[in-house]
Image 1: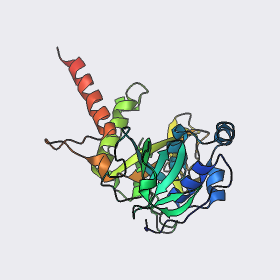
Image 2 (image 1 turned 30 degrees about the vertical axis):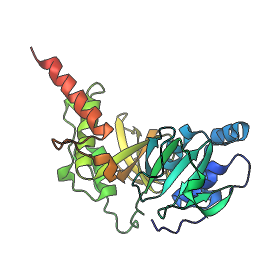
Image 3 (image 1 turned 180 degrees about the vertical axis):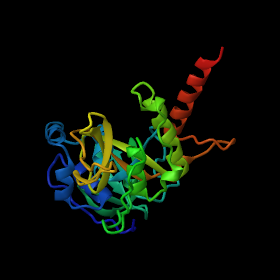
Image 4 (image 1 turned 60 degrees about the vertical axis):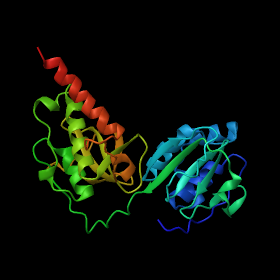
Length: 285
């Protein structure tokens, strides 16, 4: 992202979060407001602002990967060595810290000194999702047997199906599906990608939609702006019912930190590894 961050002024007493999110996403105020659920807008009007709990889901719906950091009270929160774009909660007010270290404040103006904000409570590192290639460039990948999910991931990322694990017969059961999910997620991390679960929020651009297919089985397809774009199954029938959406984003460097033994310390990876270790321990006599 360019250091030149377009300034957007808040329009109401309650909407500094909307303006800050628009600057973080590189969108207009109106387009960002459309991505905010009506319930959140009502909450903001009543409580004079969006809650910090709403931020990750809204950013995810806009295709933005982020990592939140809580700030210890009294610390020099801006002296964190980060050079990228940051969305910050300063005493219940949202601001943008630009890559050049200056502040865009939706209420006060742009290019302000960061020293004007002695305390922040939460800081989100903003990692914009790369613009998806055009439809003509993306190669639609068809699934192998029961591998609709890896086929969707391969289509969006350009990865080969050969490098993505496919579920075993046992892993296709509801009880063991989490084992396959963790295995695939760890492989993706090693290849520089991860998945963001958006629940029922319909994301912009290409995304994975999962639910029940016409064969009354769990299935995944690719949607674009919520509409079916590619079904990796030969039937091309799509979904009967959609249970949720995921976007595929590059893993930021902070998420792939490793300890002295070379093991990844990202919480998703650690959770998957610990789950595998627990299962292995159960099998020991």
